Length: 333
Image (cartoon, rainbow, N blue to C red; front, side, top):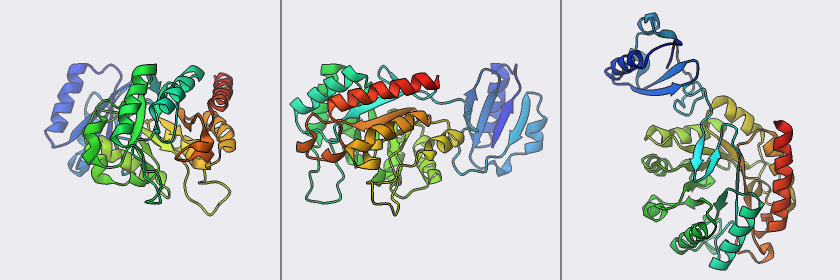
């Protein structure tokens, strides 16, 4: 349920109403805009007398929210959420360029790539330390050593970092990581999501292989319900009958998610297509569709990569992509 307050309502009046609502065992999410203030009521709202609430002098209107996701809902938070990551911002008109190797392989590799992508315009460095792989015999990542190398690259070039967590038991290793990524396979690992909700770190939540957008938003709700509102949604392709690409990139998700939610949406064309030659056009399409950022795999020597070399761009290819994306953004403005 949401209550929209009238323009001119004083902070004292708002605080008094919020206290009354909390006395009814409800949590209240306050979203203040330039013209109106929206109170999102979370909990058992069936006991709330809508007519009584609507009759209050400071209340413009009261509506029930039919969707099961509440805090992620744009009705609760009409304005776009902007998430700060180091010096970078994501959402609300700010576009993030997230780039780096699929997997951290060595100090030389990660620092060389970090320098290259920063020079091209990336403002967040990605790199996998823990790697969920389909085959138990495939390279599983450098784990804690990989995080240490990512932090070394962060100190060297000054970019904030994002890397994936697979198990909540390793959370202590992520103390200095700027953004924690939840991969597609863990999108519905609800115990993990709830624990991440108790942190104050931005969480980059990837859509599952065969999950609906409502299911993605419900996973975001698990994080937000524990107090962490810094969630970034990521469309990375879904599994369909098509075999020409690794997955099917659902760019309509960008528009639908922006319609349903205030959370920023980024697109990962690397995992979606699985082919380096398809990454630039899909990244450009994502920017044209209104995404709040792209997440691209970049490797200094893709043919020798230990993980997903076929979908990785070289630094010069990424540099060219950045130029193309900037032209699209200029055209949209």
